[in-house]
Image (tube, rainbow, N blue to C red; front, side, top):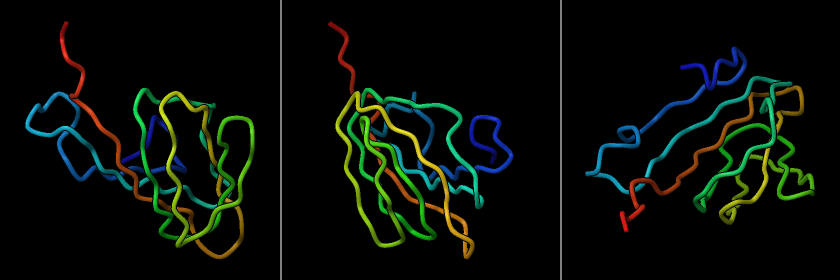
Amino acid sequence: VEYEGMENCHIKDFLPAAGDFGFDMNMHILKFKLGASHGYIETHVQEHGMYFLSGKGMYRVDDEWIPVKAGDYMFLDAYCPQACYAVGREEDFAYIYSKDCNRDVQL
């Protein structure tokens, strides 16, 4: 499935979408074709971890760009500005990530 309307980026969801209150986390694989990138710098309200499955990329964490490759792991705090793009010539850049959902308590 295309990720946020980008033809060169695809997402695979492993658990039901947010709103299914039987789950308090989501897991996804995000895959960028060579040269593809996030269209903007984003932030998440939740912490999340990423394990890089294939390829190479540059990942923006706060205001620093960090090179990442298959086998690397990264954990980001909530509200940390982030973005990434695929680099190299060999294979697409993909990572699996988890983040919490459905944990906001009504006060």
